[in-house]
Length: 145
Image 1 (cartoon, one colour):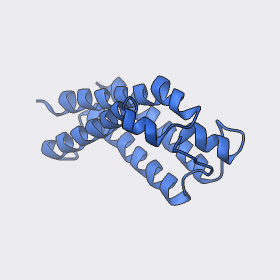
Image 2 (tube, rainbow, N blue to C red):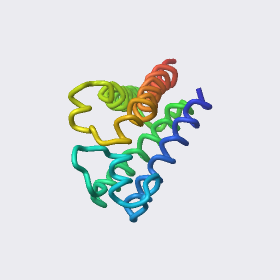
Image 3 (tube, rainbow, N blue to C red):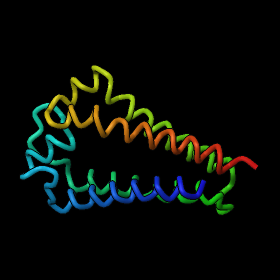
Image 4 (tube, rainbow, N blue to C red):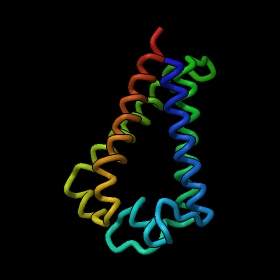
């Protein structure tokens, strides 16, 4: 259980770091803001990266999810079991929902820009599905007596 929590937390912390990097003007994996936006956001006609507050908000949420993965993975008694179950289930649903969305025609109509659309199907959505399954595992494993 603990290795899963550590792995999930590490991945989420790295993703949070990327969002902070983008909030500060970073353009990797693109070569400029437009190519980066088309690679990591992919919304129709996107020319600029999401705003600084949006990127920081996502970084904060990813960091909170990383902490939750650690708490669930360690079986910590800091929070009541019902709250851990609720938070773990919510995290699982959010990541699973985002993962599934990447395969839906409605999402593709919103995010058709390349290379995002290809990366979404190949990398981003599978990662989200894996994170969703990991949170489900951690929630069940970390909150059962």
